[in-house]
Length: 201
Image 1 (tube, one colour):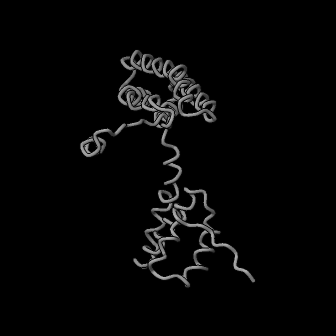
Image 2: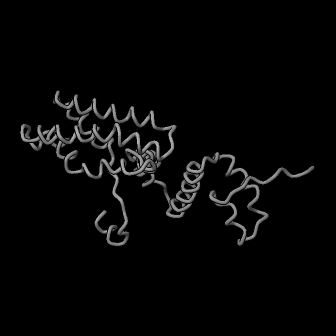
Image 3: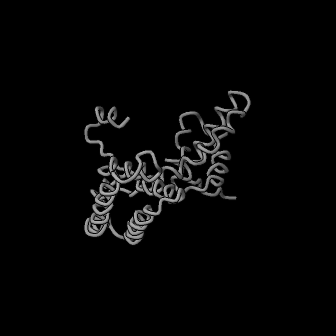
């Protein structure tokens, strides 16, 4: 998929997800692979560094990452490459090591800019609701009901992304909608919405 996008967007930068890599080592530890403990400890250091960098500017965050995170990543790769020949490729630890080595350049992509995140947890959190509800919505009933529900869910998620209280938004929009014509409806989209001033008695 990335290769196809790269043809359309040549300047596309692929950033890996450290949480995916860390999760594989946690799985290996659950399977009794004690050597995964060291890798989990290094990821813990990386995430502690990210918490410390939260309040910094993008430039300061990048400088901190280059100084402290880059050596940790280099050590992770070095240890993974040394250990890989000693473990079975299809074991949970073998898969964790292969993922880290194969995805290494993408995983260190966040070091290039303080604007980049170390993982894609923000995206995963935002799509969790539709991902969890996907099977339930198979039984939503009439196709028209499905379409209407999709519109409502889209509006609610758009509100949440913009820090808008969905209940306040829907209450205001439903109150104003009957008095508006079709050309004014665009003003009620979450990206353009402004709460109406209270009417004078």
